[in-house]
Image 1 (tube, rainbow, N blue to C red):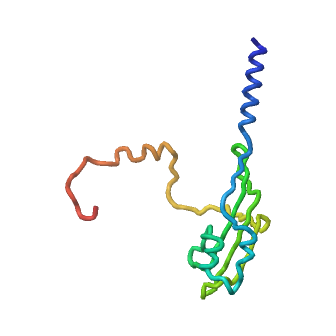
Image 2: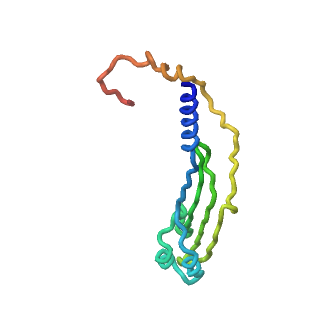
Image 3: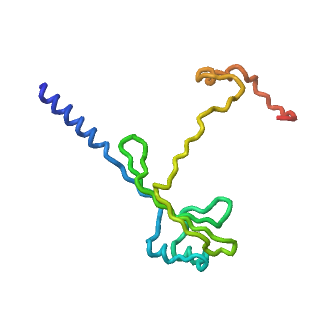
Length: 152
């Protein structure tokens, strides 16, 4: 009986460990290098770039003169944080006449980690715990009044 328990326990541990395999995700789109090399500065326009490369993955928010094509490969093991293994970004800028003005390529090596400031903004008011938040409004409401008053 004890040997059977050991075998079952070992079997469960092996299954649990094997379930934690590495997950690889690939997102985005980068066109073929030959097609990218065919895009020429001061000759191609937005229309010709879109015909050759397709719709950009992302456009700049406030101007339509910067287009980005990117792909990213990440790995993740079990519940650990996702890690970027490979990243390629193709940035195409256009001038005021919609001609290509600059083509830039970036990789994961060019990526910079931003360290946000960890200071907190002080807010005024009282700190309330979960129980006070849950029962804080008990007794604050009066009887239902169907009349309509100005300012409600």
